[in-house]
Length: 363
Image (cartoon, rainbow, N blue to C red; front, side):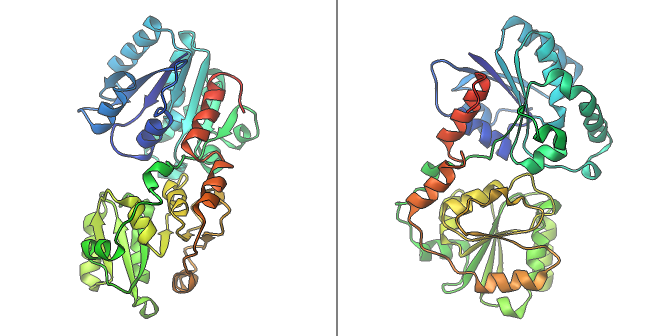
């Protein structure tokens, strides 16, 4: 079986990581190829080159469409899996023209119409017209993302499958010893403080400024807020931290030891204004860390372990109370793995589900 993944970026984002995860296990009966939008070589491109043929294009141009059409004509694919959300109908329409039988549109976000630019809004409207003509299967990281990208009518059909982004438990390293005090020192945290952690892109939609606002509260004087990540809003956040003299807020940039940070943290928080799934909420639960999320993060992220609280952003006092009173539990990690496995949120379960859709034998 020949499978082509169409990926809109080549960085270290959620889509790229998802594609790497679901193609990480080599199967004799499946050959992978990849179309990627990029202007330079990246770690992602170097990684997927080990798994199949990679075709790199600079972006949406006439030449790209022409070369993509030629690619599909010259090599007959059984499946085209487009990770393009509402843009998927463009590449899947060409796939239909060239005889590809399984054409999958996959949404990894829940970007609302009001947040789109003119081009995005135009494509979104066109997708509503053309999707049904060229798409055989729909996937989304959550029902929330499916509703916004493809419409609620798609959710109620057997063409749709929810694919929660899987957690790689090999990365969490449950039994690996790490020294919490040493990690606290590296990150500039107090020895006895309560650690409230946020991990993600520093952008307006992630709403880290909300955390800076509540960090001023006297009730949270013994809390260290740890913000991990980078993004266009970093300079503004740094200015807010300096202007407010928030010595209990630590902006530490991109870090490699994410699982150790989550295991060390007392609470993970995600106060997003807009969120497709919130994969890091899954990772936090996989580490046994309690989570507080906003009403804009789908409750589909809750793995049923009693670790997730959803609180509206307008209820600031409730956030402060939850941060003060939430305590970390001790878990048998077999219980955690079983909870994820039963929901197809481990790598092997996710791969099996997707492959069954490729083969037309959905489990």
